[in-house]
Image 1 (cartoon, rainbow, N blue to C red):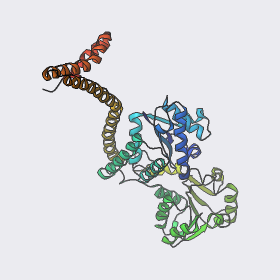
Image 2 (cartoon, one colour; image 1 turned 90 degrees about the vertical axis):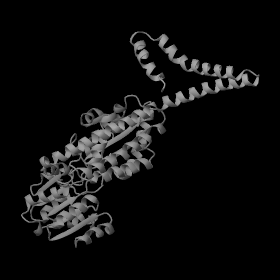
Image 3 (cartoon, helix red, strand yellow; image 1 turned 60 degrees about the vertical axis):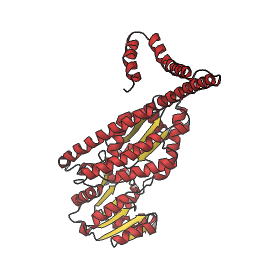
Length: 426
């Protein structure tokens, strides 16, 4: 069984490619099942023996797997291209393909927030737990991935509780506020629209509300959920269907939904700008796939920032975090070695089981022979002597034959190893 991680993130691929691989929560289970079937068709045994889990956020889409398929890294990369109907040769340069301990180290770093756009951010751990829960429900978790993720969560808790990794982090929400302040002298004079009502929008609403804007409006598919968020900030809730008629009223627009298609098209924004008499609009699109058509950025009076643009803002303060990063990496390295030791133990379990079974068969055969001799009235002392000699001869037969048929270096290695294997305790 080979353990691996294959995917892309904000450091290896632009948002235009990441959005093509992005999967919504309702799509993950089907993708996990498809991956297991893919491994089976590649020669990796039955679908039931393969394990897979997929994590998809605005910053990454990556698959963790444990399988017996030939060339499992290539098989995994090919699956991502095939499943998303992408050209593999174009996708491949943006993928990281991590085997064995590298995959484990990556999982631990992701869970701990060390591989995030916002260093040390805690949201990724919850997203990983959701992905694991979905994979489990889809039948994708087995012994290896279950253990990998449980240890990932434990490492993340240890890193967060024993280092200052999250103490100096700048959130995407705070970065959005900073960028909007480059456009407007005071957010207190602006009308703010949030599109969506998920966790990221909640964080953004809290940061913008702290600046006391003139108004806060939440646009969401579910009016009830939007209203719940709006009431916290004395705001208004509207439906997404109301956006074409209302968009021109807002100076700041922050969007983050799970929509697979853009919600704000070029034409809609152009009409809104015309109605505003070309007063500037700040837009932050934190969604992947994007909620706002990229062409909107070409409009003179629109300042559109994507999740990648905000990444440049959140990199401030990196120096103050380096000591915490070093501590976190040390913890992770220790835990990686521990996990790989567990994997190594798992690998020899079948060998140990076979040894026990073959030894038990030899023991039972000699015991049955001894019982027959005793039943015929043979001297018990002689029977015991024969029993001990028979067991010894059978246990040594295999090693002696291997040593006899070995040649050169192989014989030398066996000659050095066998005394260690058969040296009894005194």
